Amino acid sequence: MYRCLVFIIKVIEMEVKLLRVTGEGVELVATAAKTSDSSLMRSAKEIVELIVDNDYSSALEHIYFTFDIEGISVALSRELLEHRIASHTARSTRYNEEQGFGFYIPEGLKGDAEAIYRGAMKSANDTYARLRKLGVPREYARYVLPMALHTHYVVTMNVRSLINFFMLRLCVRASPEIRELAKCMYKLCVREYPTIFAHIWCRGYTLGVCPENMVRPANCPFKGIIPTKRVLKREFESEARRLIEHELKTS
Ligand SMILES: Cc1cc2nc3c(=O)[nH]c(=O)nc-3n(C[C@H](O)[C@H](O)[C@H](O)COP(=O)(O)OP(=O)(O)OC[C@H]3O[C@@H](n4cnc5c(N)ncnc54)[C@H](O)[C@@H]3O)c2cc1C
Image: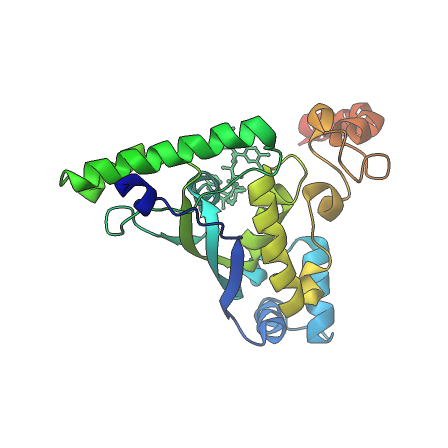
């Protein structure tokens, strides 16, 4: 009876909100760029486009985005934390009670597989609840919680770091959950600053060449229109190498 009461399946969709963004960022970045080069006689929009196009990205670090992210798994939060050029805050499993937790269900799980998966979540929840009932502190009981456990996250990134994040995580090779998060964040970013983000997607699109080479998956939408680095490099490598050797010899 106790077990039935505590296990409420929470089906929470991922929810991403923009908490804060630097205002008038295009003008701010242009002002910074003009500090570097006072002869820049272009509009703020043109300067920012030049910066994005030529990858003079340090000026983009003046614009910050803060996102409030709910309904993501702890597994995803670990991937997010790998992005070091950011400020991260996550819900604590020491300070918060996790009985009846929400959890991520991968889209590909259907039928028996989904039933087994849900059973494992219920079992983890039951174990957690039993430990808590015995008086076990949250900081011990939390070790039985699964990677699928939903967490709440606040992350702040500057635009340069966000571009790096999108280039890596909008790629079809990124795991499905973080790719979904990246798309949600991208929509908020492109709405705020289309001048910058309309030129950004995965590494292949942004750079015009895909570094994934042999591991580029079949479902990549740009296969056939964006070359891989290896293919492109093969065309110029020997001649370019010859020029490098010449420069090394003559310097
Ligand atoms: C498809 C995919 C698969 C992955 N698989 C794995 C995996 O199996 N295991 C795993 O551990 N990670 C994995 N990762 C994570 C990956 O290795 C990076 O840790 C993560 O993408 C963060 O990228 P980043 O280092 O560019 O970002 P950030 O940490 O935000 O760094 C941004 C940039 O700053 C610079 N920088 C940051 N720190 C340093 C430093 N110490 N020294 C020099 N330059 C620095 C680099 O130019 C870096 O690109 C995977 C990522 C992707 C997209």
